[in-house]
Image (cartoon, rainbow, N blue to C red; front, side, top):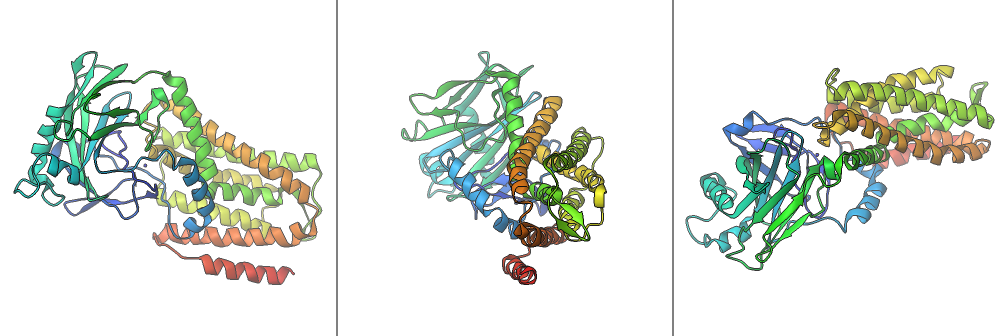
Length: 465
């Protein structure tokens, strides 16, 4: 979503939305992925030490115009599923986020100005901390946290080394203090947290530990699940770093692959454009009565196999850093692949060679998968298992789509309405949508297309009646 070194830091609030805000530093723009409340913003200031570790993610761009319309139903379903687990930034609460990787452990503290200033007696004085004067008081805040938070391994306190600070503009503003842990030779099995921030001043204050990334426990890109709760009477607690092992992490990456293909509307639309005519036979320039079951199934298997082999190759090459392509070029090619596949329904030009086109464009889809995998911050460890798990998850999701769609298409393949009405309308709709994506991704613009899509579909319906 991202990041100091190999860490991906995500901001959260009640309503998650995937965006690409700008982290502002001395007039420069550095893109990073954050999930945060609509209307909030994030400002970061980096010190000299963090400049060496900062990395720009290769996230997949999500446009919020037409794509918001296309994905509305899925967003509603996901919101219904996850809303009970989301944890808001509330006053009276502070937060500790951690990411645990094979080669480093890091995290960040978050606390609101509205809680910090009154509790420490800073309100109404020259020492009050605000978003505008944070740089002036940052050393005070760092020292306060060092005095009130201890993170230990095997009974030995680890060094909390601050790297970056900033402000999350939500609910009056939250201070963000990013840090790395030092003083250990290998990732410990258990981390002990002694958290006492504001507990002496405000006995009702509560704090929460959220683990954003830990392969061993299958925690990847977590932005909602709380691991530990701290209070004045329970401020020292243990967290098991390696409680469930690599197998749990592998299964979590498989789940990410399934989720990505099912929620990746451009990938799904490409598959649908290929499957819609796969159950029909082209004769005399028109689609006619469908093929028998076995030939139709073989045709689908060829298409899916070509797509699988192609995207598996480039997913591996890109993830290993052997081959890289510009993200915008890849995204444009993926959108164009949908238009071409859908165009082949109306004007078949590839005939029996469609699988070659599928393989060619499948290569670009593989680069898109690799960008998503990198964007999730998963490639920094267990690279082989990450690639295998994510690719396996993509294939599981792909097979699920085919198994759900193919029987329906085969059942309706001989209907006149399917051949003369549903097929061309679907093709025109996919061409129009993917063409807009091409424009959006090429020129980085947002095209509102709801009314235009409606008008075009009505015209197509009028012609086929």
